[in-house]
Length: 500
Image (cartoon, rainbow, N blue to C red; front, side):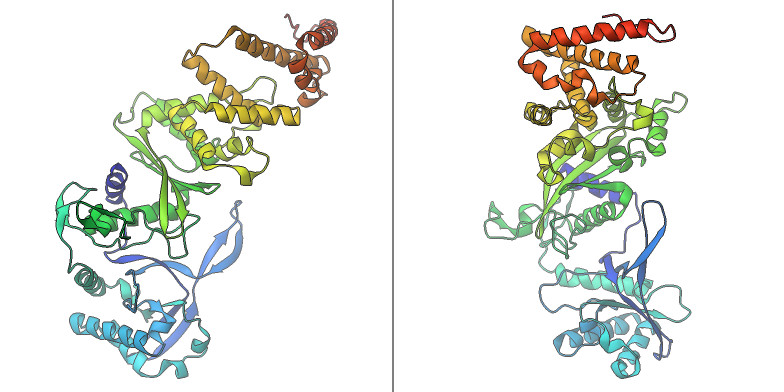
């Protein structure tokens, strides 16, 4: 359970919501006077920006940390809940009022009393537009001239934590927690859903799910198969939701969502989405500086997830020391520098999505294992699988062209073969060296014609496929053309003279 342990450890370094609280999209905020009279109601919105930082149309609703409990039947949430619980009729409204009265009797909080008075005054008649609010939209309360929302008041938070623990902890046995290794009261049902992974429902999914009758072991069933303490359950769930909420801590490619965090706190999505971002260069400079060296024990953690309805599927788990990661990542960037294309400063480095996209005709065809292979290549310097290289070569033959993206993929594979000193046959070596000769022919033609011709339009690239079938015949033609190009270069003293 290394994943859970590291998530619990990460949760201790960030500010998390109060116990029993989780993020929820709140649509409306009702402000009351302390005597319970209505003050105003306003629709909450979330400000949006495009990639250039320009303001866009606000999105309805605002994410707030609110009292939360997983409910399979009628179960009210304190203060902040849906309209059908607060202003509806029947058992749901009764459950909400009963919980609110219980909170006031326990805390004697005047703000809670104000909400009770307001609800007893038939608010649907006195508040304009209240009846038009959708039953599933979430509403919260604020008291005029109070800084905090009512559900964020400390007495209210303490009451809710005790209430949730009371109704969910009655049947909790004491077992060894897999996340912390300590004996503690373990949860019988994981409380917080994980939101933000494509493929899951709007309510989110569970990282650990063992509720069916088939999930039994040594006479244990349900969540007891993987015993997690109630505190650790909330910690790793809140930490994972935090990572999926913060843009710098996660990246979705295809249908896989990667979340990552590091001990230095400097690893973010730019490493795999925008390799030329200044933050990436600053990090690599920070690692290489000698006056204040990085802690050699610091690590980076990467978790790959996909969603399947109410469950999360762990596709991969990577952890590596940051010093080793920085070294591997720098090699990954260096392997993108290919002779014959624009200078890397002009073109920029490719990200994971661009590399994975180059292996298929349509982005919808990208497989999770392909995306993951490129991720592990960047993080661990793992060799790209041969099946992937065969796919790239097939794309080259089909299109009768080698573009920059696929050239980078092939170069990364070849570099890995060299680094690992993997033996290749004489035939393979001849083919590889002949390919390098074609690159020289193409560059020679571009130099002779003052780079007025694009690389794909050079003789070497036009006849690339034909060379593979008839290398002897095509070699004579290309060599003759190369001789003419060298003669043209020789007439210009300022030009570089190529020698083959």
